[in-house]
Length: 475
Ligand SMILES: [Fe+2]
Ligand SMILES: [Fe+2]
Image 1 (cartoon, rainbow, N blue to C red):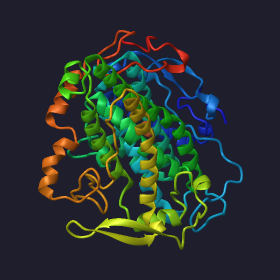
Image 2: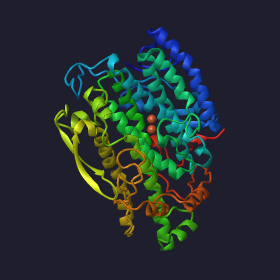
Image 3: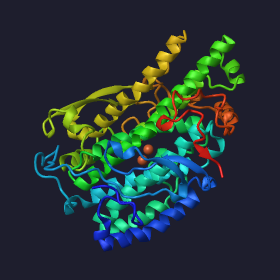
Image 4: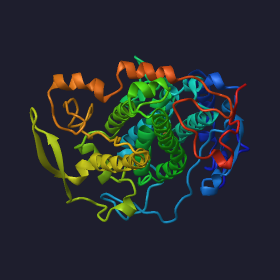
């Protein structure tokens, strides 16, 4: 079904024919807009921004670009088309028809998953709300705003499910999604990474590379869900999410490119000399990567968890690309070997049921996906004639959740003493002088043809426009 933009809430779910639901959502809509004004990038409310808006849910549906003021963006409810005869793709009910309603016995599990996913969406808008003031170019400013409006749209996606399928509880949860705030002492966001401040653009690029990619994997596994409206919602969200990771991957690539240009110009890889030219030295970049990667790994949860087993067994949440990547979709007998910490300094191998290790299966798929950008960036470095290599740290490093939580390890995952860990953490994650330097780079650049000193221009502009197109006209 095509998207109806003539209604107050654009949608492709035939909202006009469900008056109760329509009224409930129209009641929530002004609260959302209040939240956007209070917690979103409201200093830029009058800017004209070159944004894409979905007009359909297929690949061509993204062809619509135009100049919009952000508060006028048409947030709405878009689900991917229903697949005829879709059956349950994994777990104990494999092969049976999918559900159009939430089965009563799984209601609280579904609600928790939807609320947790929904909570991350407005959280990231809150985290990024001040970045517009220090944008490295109008091109980047436009990308930031595109991400912000789409994260707002993702909140709508989850709120629709809560309103449509969870009755009064769902409506209450929808209110709470606007009441928690990133970093708030009393009412923080649910997940740790979404309470970390993002006060500079290097952190923003790391966040879109690592944390939006966690989003991709969560959405991919929810897109497999037996609860069909959730699966369809997530399938469409994935098409929006792809742009966010594009911003992270190309953005970090442009940082590397600029650094290499400076290294060539000055004929040195001395971090101080590079910093004097207003560029980011590669060891500093590595520390930012270490921080955001390790923080994002926690989002997948504990390595061994009975709850992960039951969400899989019950058909609630599958594995990313369940159909194409795996042979055994039931996993009742399969096992998995894991490395777990075993007392001071020791590691043991433990065999657990595969269903219990589903969080780790997801995390591993995620880590593999994270490696792609590193290969590209390292190729740039190698071609420029330098031996430096950017690396993902071990997934044991600096964990706060799961079996490796609070186990001090080095970047390779070797267990070390607590004291050594604390001491070396300033070499491994951004230290005070790194942060001060990165902050000093955060100067706003808004002349159409210009880029900040620390980032190279992109290869091409948005939607075939020139790189120096005026993507944002500041009001
Ligand atoms: Fe999102
Ligand atoms: Fe995202």
